[in-house]
Image 1 (cartoon, rainbow, N blue to C red):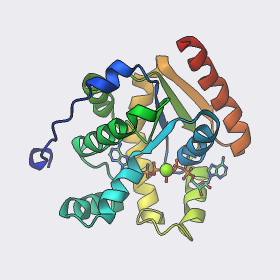
Image 2 (image 1 turned 90 degrees about the vertical axis):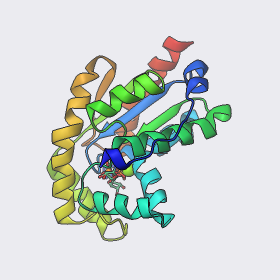
Image 3 (image 1 turned 120 degrees about the horizontal axis):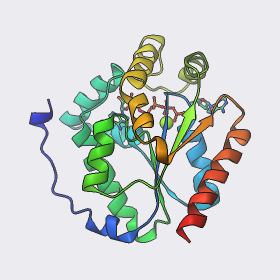
Image 4 (image 1 turned 60 degrees about the vertical axis):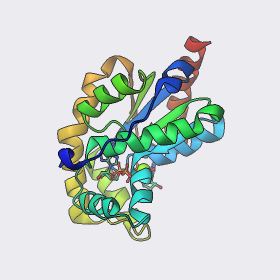
Amino acid sequence: MAAQIERKQIDSTPLRESGVPIIWVLGGPGSGKGTQCERIVAKYGFTHLSSGDLLRAEVQSGSPRGQQLNATMERGELVPLEVVLDLLKEAMLTKLSSSKGYLLDGYPREAAQGEQFESEVAPCSLVLFFNCSDATLTERLLKRGQSSGRVDDNEETIKKRLNTFHQHSKPVIEKYASKCKDINAERAPDDIFKDVETSIDALLAAKA
Ligand code: AP5
Ligand code: MG
């Protein structure tokens, strides 16, 4: 499939030269990536880019590529890495002049995505990993599925999303362990956010 994907020529040099912090926000499906990113944006004014939201916007555009992406997401599988990286790069460049930092929510989801990002864009400054059991994740997503309208918030796809997470995304956390903060995400959002603040404050202090 990757062979059919036409890459866009996007020059990421301005991103690399800006030195703006880049935070990868990882965790299983329903671990609270989006929830915590909203809070980070409110406190630190960072730019939040969710790879899932960018893909869903591409699906909404009604393009042939969007239809393919929707089918992949409905199966709970990963879309081709070039598609996500190009969408992210474009979105990051669009926001560069006003960005104090980037939160990449749900990226990278496989080791190759991390490697490609750091070689084509810039090194990541910090990884936040929201660690949560499959039982809790399933419960949250089934609850959200009652009203979310997302094609992947159903029992069958949730199982597949969890499998994809364990098989492909867990290795990312191991690979980048030296930059990674492992945060217990079984707790209430406010308690989780306290740990998030500690990690981000330390990053900003080190950069100052
Ligand atoms: P994506 O949209 O990223 O979905 P996901 O990873 O499955 O995670 P969610 O967005 O469902 O959950 P979340 O962690 O943001 O949690 P939330 O805050 O919403 O990706 C969708 C698909 O796109 C993928 O399966 C894949 O196909 C494709 N894709 C995306 N990125 C890709 C990539 N990089 N490469 C390839 N393919 C990619 O919270 C969930 C629920 O729990 C909410 O109802 C919330 O209110 C509740 N909640 C949150 N925190 C708490 C808490 N502490 N306690 C109790 N409830 C909580
Ligand atoms: Mg999300």
